[in-house]
Length: 245
Image (cartoon, rainbow, N blue to C red; front, side, top):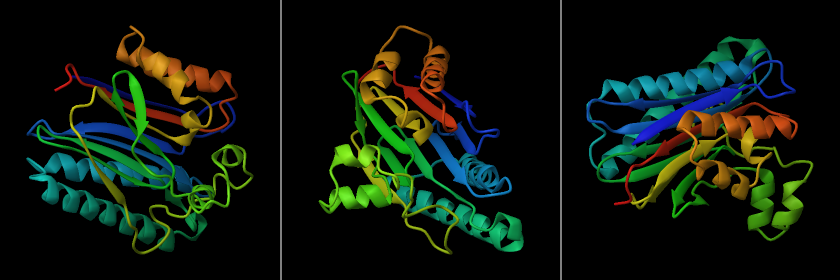
């Protein structure tokens, strides 16, 4: 098993509001965490950093997440804690009012695989060289698509495609979607919309299926997104399992 993560400000933004990490606890359980922040006066980078740092720290402090049900409860608990930290910071720092962040995570243990998300950063499972999106974007446009008011094609270039319906830190409480996925995948891939808005699934698959070292694959994805304009910060986290179980 090998894993890596990378973040880049892109070609347009003068600072990076994304945060990403991969952490492992004493039992060898692995948590991939990625957040895409938003808000003025460095609010976005503060929000994503607080969220990723707190969640990563809490995960590494425990020996094991326990069974599936315990793990879901634990993930929701630490995300709720991170949400309150952001909400408190925003209320105490008026210049950061309105700050928040998306969040996508994947937890891999010897017995199960869980994904969780808030907002529009994406989580994918990889099987037979193909990427399958697990998470559900909490955006206005996605809501319109699901209700039949908008086609998926029209959604791609909709002027309000980045309007979030859910974000960490926006309210005193937040609901995270959790997805229980079969563990027999080849890989786990998380990314911010700075990548998914620039590259198609096929283009990402082609890079991940190449023979490049894992770090070079992630750098190539970021280079490709930047070559297409790099209009946003770009973050990726990738775990490749050695064998399909």
